[in-house]
Length: 382
Image (tube, rainbow, N blue to C red; front, top):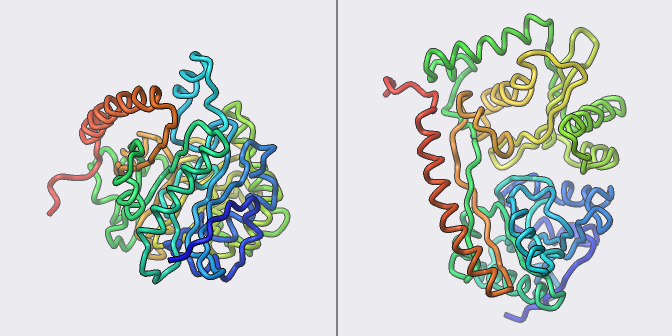
């Protein structure tokens, strides 16, 4: 196998046919449309602290393997939190940034990270070569570390056989058990949980609010403006700067089409809130929510219950509403393990971080045990 290694500084220079030949697991965050829109809009750029340095392996002039990668000058938008690691470096007079990240910007979503051309007979060797290319790039650019976040099982199996440090966490996902309607789902829950969900949904209905679902290619300029306005409102409400610009939303809507879904809450003709989702690979992903008027229960309805209803209506198997949030457990979401892998070049810090991760794994197991005491599902069902 003769392989040509390349580092690509602009995702949109990739040949679309080459990209389509890779195994993306039908993950919308690994679509050419999504990753391309991030860079074309400038939402991902060196100025934003995300310098594209994508890892690519070519065989006979064709793209054989690829890992999305960015040189980072901060840890925003990653959702695998290493701020304490950076602080430890700083306190010892060392630079943690820049570092190298393999993942999807601003998206805490498990998926392919070491992509290989479908049907290639040496998939594992190509994935190992991508990991080796990441290590070489860290050495060449004198980066402190490489982080491969939210890896799917097939990539985790390869990375577990390396010397990378492994880290886990929990997310909360909803699983469709072949429900015919929302009420059938509710009947699986304990009485108190059912009553609470019905109360939240009734608050929204009593406020005279209805929802309209639109695909990306159905969003006109006014609708995209409203989506962006709500998105900015949510970030500002928590004292954060919005990472994505208006141009990204316009590009994503046009290019993702049916894979981008928006639920818009209206009172009469007046739009009040929105939730934005991506769909693909048998999964629905909740990404952003925002409103222009605070109404009791509206967040849960827009961000969770509308998504559950869409999954039931369209037979979507899994709903991932985003990172964190123990409050999701009482609403029918269950804990799911996420994984990331980390190359730390400094041997002293590698040893210290390894010890920390061992302790953290114990805390996460305890946390999972505590969550089990709050699971909402009835135990009297077969």
